[in-house]
Length: 328
Image (cartoon, rainbow, N blue to C red):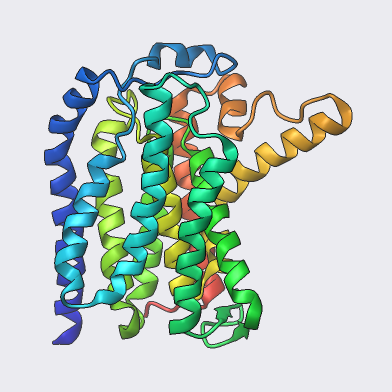
């Protein structure tokens, strides 16, 4: 009798968050428009993106508000969800300040790099120290089964910080096409939702993943091509923090590299482009991140997003094999 109740609980949370976001969309999108919180498109970006100039940004608040409200109620039952919320909203706040400076103060780059990094580091260090004091420093090794772990010892705290900073920047880089980051994150968090169902100790993670999944699906109603709103750094930094924190809590940062392989590819494409250009003066890709390379190669934006979603599903299937999960 326990399993159907658990399934219905997280499905209910998923639906509740999804509906909450659908309701908030028509409230916040016109508000963001009236406040003139419009997106500024890169001068060196694809010309097809110029028409997106002025589209409301900072839309991450549309799914972060439901996550906050529902988490507050659930925390009465299981306060272990609060550290996940702390990282998500903390990174989202840094992104919000960055977006605010861009659209209101008209400073194109938003926060200076050191300011943004300091904000992210304060949150990441706080979370890393908390987790190091409340759970073991073990992480699951891919393809060896969930019971085979490796202890990081004193390296756990710096490792956790790197995971969080890396994941939030990777999702931020992925957020470059209508529906891309929200769709990929929906797929990744559904993956972690399914995995978290295998152990009762991860019930709070399952609920949190359901919230993030529901929020992303609801946001796609307004962010899919042609987007009526962009999540901005407010949303992308928050989602990156969320998936990184989930992976840490479940001892699966290495599994995140597999299931979140699309994030990895996007981030690597930027690193490769920058490094190769500095070394040779030439470019590997027509434009980085790699989703722009495919656009400039003639792919329609919808095709790029659809293919990247499909690849993300494949990565998550590989993730199940990496954990040796059996469903029968």
